[in-house]
Length: 387
Image 1 (cartoon, rainbow, N blue to C red):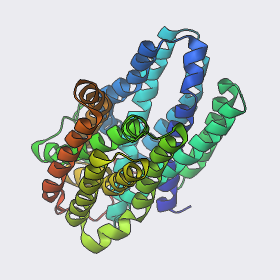
Image 2 (cartoon, rainbow, N blue to C red):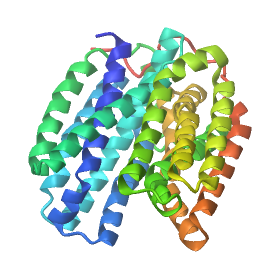
Image 3 (cartoon, one colour):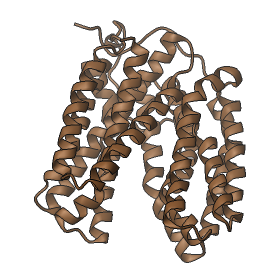
Image 4 (cartoon, helix red, strand yellow):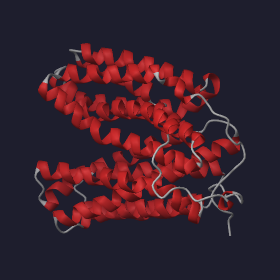
């Protein structure tokens, strides 16, 4: 398996864990007897765990090598999929979710850093397509999970089998990852906590805007269509699905666009498309117009996060440290976007909430030049030489 296909399989496996887990949340709520408020707190724990652990990821990669660290963290993330279903009480679920999120966040950092290094090795953009494979894995596993839930299959059986399959599949794929180079081990170790530099913080602001719009739309699209556009449950769910499909498709094609236009123009064009979609969402009072609006938002924001990770990986002292720095900012956005959207919708209105999101997309469009490519090494530089 080529390194490009191997890291694409890694991204798909990572997404498959997220997609599988999302479909069994109602089972977990019933099994552990969680109220809506307690479930909300439980679902916050993975993000807290990820946010706390991500700054350590680049140091682990330096110590053990990018390939070995990616394989180990992905195995933990895939194997951990089964653990929440076996939690005997809420307190254990919270602890499991914290660890679950920590492995997810650190794996996210090192696999994106590996993707940035692969781009340098291949001398062409690949990171958008890798994120597209994440979405494909998430959608495919989510569909399988939906079927399992409708069939009444116990989540312990479903998630246990999926976890075992993904551990084996990701282990096989990990063998094809790009070997660690001989030079980085001679350099200084990354900081224990990789707080973002000024340059990475600027890139992170773009990522914050893109992640905010993405998180708000994915979490609130169906609710918005139901409450504002008077859509039925099936149509509202279709709006979310179309949003996700548009984003996944655009990411799979995004590398070609970046090769033709460059990252700045790709982000600027995507921002304009997303702003147009946001305006349609705000004005929508029929399901069709709202779905078109969310589809355009999905198309527009698709390449933002991949290009932010690529730019940060090339701007940092090492790809891992750069990605870790910007990932803390984008995860913070992911934590706050659904809540802020809900607060504005409850305090003012749903259209007002998405008017705010549209304004954030305007800011993203104006900030696109911070993603202009910097001079970067084209050679492969990873953390240590393979044994």
